[in-house]
Length: 333
Image 1: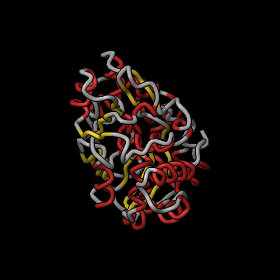
Image 2 (image 1 turned 45 degrees about the vertical axis):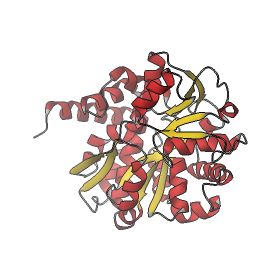
Image 3 (image 1 turned 90 degrees about the vertical axis):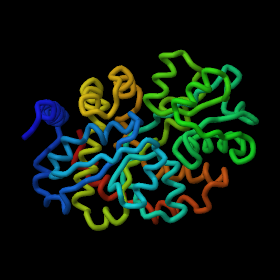
């Protein structure tokens, strides 16, 4: 039996698909997914909205058992994908580069959205270079926030291994420490930047959605467990189709997308969710080349001493763009 909330979400999302010109007959002509189960991730990060909004679209793609594995730390997405306890998830490009460099069994499938991180600091920090000799809070070493700040530091000639003091705290603790001036900077992902702005805490030094060069590359990339993708190519394409459709919904109908993730319990604050939908560039997946993103972050992380492999090797061994290329033709919009 379909609950009223699920029915309304399904009606809304199917209506959006119709308005945007998607062709459901293409999906119907394909064989059903090789498995009815799909396991994704649910973290506090609202920027993963396309995979949350996709829930009903995934059911329409033939997945009768859609599971969201709840993780408190986005950094754990890497481990869950590699272990095969999660089949597909969005994840930040930089830690994915580190995973590929160490040979983890993952495969990158498509860029989904550009920039969502904001580097927020005290009034004494006006540029990335000003972090030299200062303290930066992250959720964990090797996680999305740590690798992103390390990339930025390396890009401006600051050594992230020696020139910065890293402290690890949960986001709620880091926000409090920043407000008290006990740390110098903190990198947050939605809804953290929205909350800091609302509380007038700190100043934004870098917004990865608007500031170059970060805004020219994908932030989150749809990534699959390698064995899942190998065994289930039809399921992989169908899942990716639902996620990319949902990215379009986030971009074109932000109010509907925000309401969907609130109603389904993925985040509690509608105002922060709506700000995220309106601020994150969810409409670039057709435009940017995800291979360029891998090249960019591989070079930055190599400069930071965090990866050894060159970009071409990582792209050859850890990506599969065939599903994306097919879906770009099908979903011209």
